Image 1 (cartoon, rainbow, N blue to C red):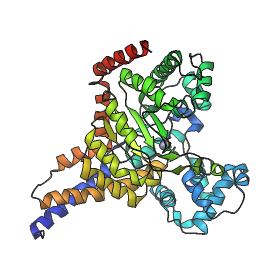
Image 2 (cartoon, rainbow, N blue to C red; image 1 turned 180 degrees about the vertical axis):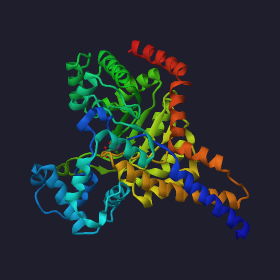
Image 3 (tube, rainbow, N blue to C red; image 1 turned 135 degrees about the vertical axis):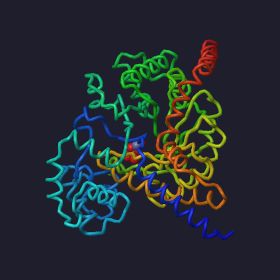
Image 4 (cartoon, protein in one colour; image 1 turned 180 degrees about the horizontal axis):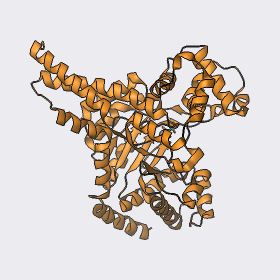
Length: 442
Ligand code: RAT
Ligand code: ZN
């Protein structure tokens, strides 16, 4: 069907509205590695941190010839200098992560044409730390930043234990990877902290883990629990990870009314010499996620998957299970072509009950480019979607588009999380009584 000139005009008008609304909307960034400014140096910021971002480290080593250990032994400024030289001076910075540095500097009002690292450093050194945080959040139009908080990180734990005045823009998420991925070592740490945990997963150990999770959820006011898991993750299974999920993490989530976020498909340490930059990707077996969602209807799962090949299956699962909320284009999928493909697929299959993006920012200023670039792609996709509605005779109003974009930028996530705390506690308690009865019979 050929669009008439009237419908072409309407499409144009809708396009203008959509672009404007998406560009202006405040977003809640539901997964980052940023910290409340009270954590001081744990909140990375500045040109050297922007350059020594593990996404760029991996790219720079495509060109660098020095041994890995020599690179890591260098001071951070020298590492940054090498990356700058390899990726910005000797070659054009066209990869997504390189382009991100330029977008960021440009939006901060710096002249990137000069290619002058020293003057960039001088500019960052002059910034007032607190004001700079606000400026970056404002430029990115980010309302709330979800941190990734690990009690297993000694530096971070010390700050929580000391206590500090919270910045309400930074909210917490409790990261539990060491518990689920390296239980024997984690059990020792729990035991040193006074919890009844031993390498054998006895009822006492499980109680210790539940107590640990409850204490830390309360201490940091966690909004969800989270883990990233390798492609080989299986559920149900007899290993400690699967058992801890079933017997400690999920009961705790039901009890506290919090969702459990699963980030699936990371192969840790494919090249350990690259440190943080050495992780890879593998296709996950989403039958395990299906089993989790089906077996635990009183739990809610926030899920993102790293492999492009898993994306379609994940959307189909979300159509089957309303206790599953899909979020973000994670890490290697956070490149414009794939973000576009995934966003389109998600809107086609699950409509607006999704959170299309999170930033995964590790350096404060990255919020600016990650959200600039994502907004562009999300707007492009939405322009097409609303345009199709216009062709079908439906005229979306500005209010409706505002409402929808708000949902995509944190509203749907908020509602999903609220559902985890409201509707499911009673059902959760019933289930827990059953589990306890079963445990008693063992
Ligand atoms: O995207 C990243 O920065 C990765 O290094 C990971 O941290 C990943 O996002 C994760 O949370 O495991
Ligand atoms: Zn992350």
